[in-house]
Length: 124
Image 1: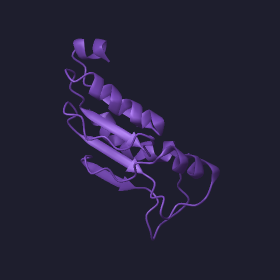
Image 2: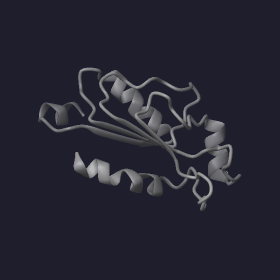
Image 3: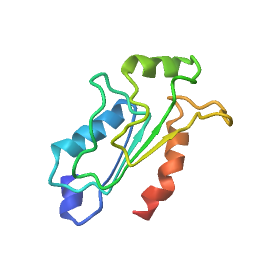
Image 4: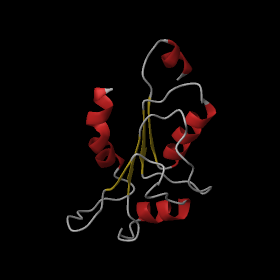
């Protein structure tokens, strides 16, 4: 990330599950590097929610609403891991499994989550 920044590249960080927690930590560990876009896909962490890092310009949080999610094994693992769901510090929050059009979407569907964000990532 430091090499990309030194080369004048815009930085986009994307993380799913515990990887979402890791990209937030990465941004916090590098406060001198501006992050153009941070994307978290059903972020999970046992330590609880963190605020938006100061060096992040825009944070999109795509998540599963576990109050209405099914009991599939992937969703149960995410529940155990500590899902963040809606994050007050994010600039954009979107639950993928909202009613009334609740086709199966769960923690394991990172590809579907990323498909929503790909157009934003490509613009950067």
